[in-house]
Amino acid sequence: MSATLTPEAAAAAAKQPAWMRFIASKTRTRTLVFASVLFFLLAFTRQVTDNSNDLTSSGTVGTTLRVTIPIMLAGLAALWSERVGIVNIGIEGMMILGTWFGGYGAWKYGPWVGLLLGILGGAAGGLIHALAVVKFNVNHIISGVAMNLFAFGAMRYLSEIVYAQDTAGGKAGGGISKSPKQQGPIPRFNMPFLGGGKIFGWRSPDLLGWFERRHWFLVGDAAGILRGLMVGVSWASVLALLLVPVTGWVLWRSRFGLRVRSSGEAPAAAESLGVKVSPLRYAALAVSGGLAGFGGAFLSIVSANYYQQGQTQSKGYIGIATTIFGNWRPSGVLGGATLFGFAEALNLVGKKSLPNLFLFGTLVCGLVFLLSLARRRMLPAINAIAAGAVLLIAFLTVNEVPEPPRRRCRTSRR
Image (cartoon, rainbow, N blue to C red):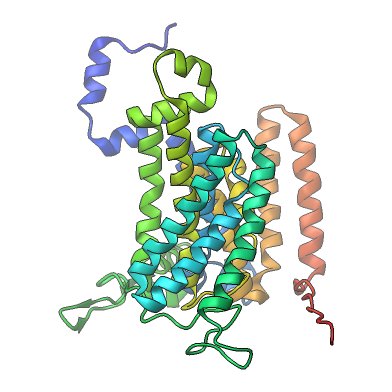
C-alpha cells in the first residue's frame, strides 16, 4: 500500500489548524510522549525520595535556564559551522571574545550595547577562522585550537591595558583578570497571575507558586517547572531561545539555508549550480561566531555583572557535544544543553538532591529495558539492565556527590 496521500487527503490536511498539523507529525508526537514520560518519572522520583523537592522546583528550573542558554548558543554555533562543512573547534575562543567585549560594553555603555559588542566580537572570531580555513586552507582543528589560544592570550593582554591601572589595583574594581561591574542588568520579568508579575504597579497573584508549595504529585511538579520559566526571566534569555526556531526555519525552510546546507554536504554540486560556496562559508562562520559571542556575553552580563577570566568554563566544548548529541538539529541542541544545564543547576541549587538523579536514571533504564524487550532487541535490553543496576547501586550507596578538587595556581617567587 502506498503511503502517498491523495490530493483530497492532502488538501484536507492543509486545511487543518497549525497546532493540529504540529501534533499530527509522528516525530513531534514521539517527542511529546517521550518528554511526558520523562516528566512523570522525574515527578515520581521527587515523590518517593526525601528532601528532593529541588528536582522540580522553580529555583532549579530558573537556574537551569540560565545555565543552559550559553551551552545552547555554543551548540547552535557548532550547528551552523557543521552545516556549512567546517569544523569549529574555536567556539570556546569565540565565547571568550564574547565575554570580554560583552563585559567591556556593559561597563562602558550598558548591558544591551555590551550584548551587541559581544556578538560582534564573536563574529569577528568566526571570520578569522573562516579566513584561515577557506582562504589559506588551514586544517580546521589547527585553526580552531589557534583561535582558542589567541582569544585567551589577547583578552588577558587587553584586560591589562584597559582594566589594570597599575600593579596595586584596577579601575573601579577591575583588574588584569576581570572588568569593572556593568552599569545595570538586563531587565527581567515575571508573568502576571502565573508568576506574580506586576500590572501597572499592582502585584498580581502567584498562582503557580501556590500549587508548587503544596508539593502535590504531578500538579506541584508541573507548577514548579512552569513557574521557573516565568519568574525572573531575563529578556536576553527570551531572545536566545527564539534563536532555536529561527535557526531551524532559516536552515531548513529558506533558500539561504538550502544553499548553506548544500555547500556543506556537496560543495562541488552546489558550485555546478551557480552557488558561491566561499561567501556562504564566510557568512555561516560569522553567524557561528556571533552565536558563540552571544553565549559569552550572556555569561558576563546575565549570569554575572562583569567579565571574569575563565568565565566560559569549557562551555564551548560542551556546546559542540550537544550538537552531536542532538543529531545536528536545533531542537536536539536545546535538549542536550538542557540535560547538561539541569545537572549543573541541581548541583548549584540543591546539591543534596543530586544523588536522587541516580534513581531517575534507574527508572529510565528500566523503561528502555521494557521497550527493548517488546521490540525483541536483546542487546539494548541487556545494556539497559546493566546500566540500571549500576545506577541503582549508586543511589543506594552514594549520599553526596563530591566536587572535583580545585587546582591551585602556583606562582614563582623572584
